[in-house]
Length: 227
Image: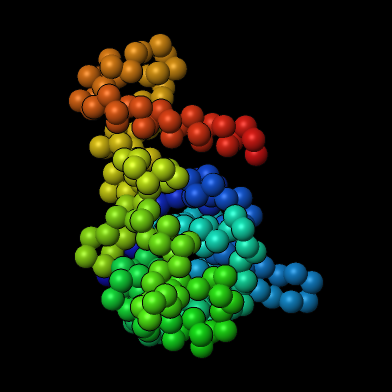
């Protein structure tokens, strides 16, 4: 049975843009690579699929790797083994799009990351005051996710934790939106000369929703120009 996690949502290019990583990096995580005589298996897939489309679960799990991307090179072999062991121990195909490793299964995750030989820079949980706590990157990722029971159903692409901007598989075809209204559409209205209060009234939004949507879209444009 196809679930929301299996739903093909994005092209590689669009997923990379939303995650603010390079498409080549995302492709590497999804499909692995051949470098000379050495083959590197994917991290997020069991095997390469030879496709440039990204499922919702793959998008969410790539968001987890993204949290480590800014300051560390992602260790392919160890992370691949870590994800494979998580799949086995939790009995789910997409363990990083499942809430349990971040909440109720931290003891199991601790054992798995140790068994996988995962470097401490990539740990999901650590020990503090005799308690298992999420590491800073893992906690940051967890706070970006909206959960329905144990399933990831939304992702906050905006860096600001107060932002209402979300991408959801069942809203606007996965495009960033605020209360169901595409941030891109809001920005287009603003570009056309509409005042923010008028845009809010047009789409039955709060003025703050419009401000958040525009702040997000402006940040995307700035990042695109800088790339």
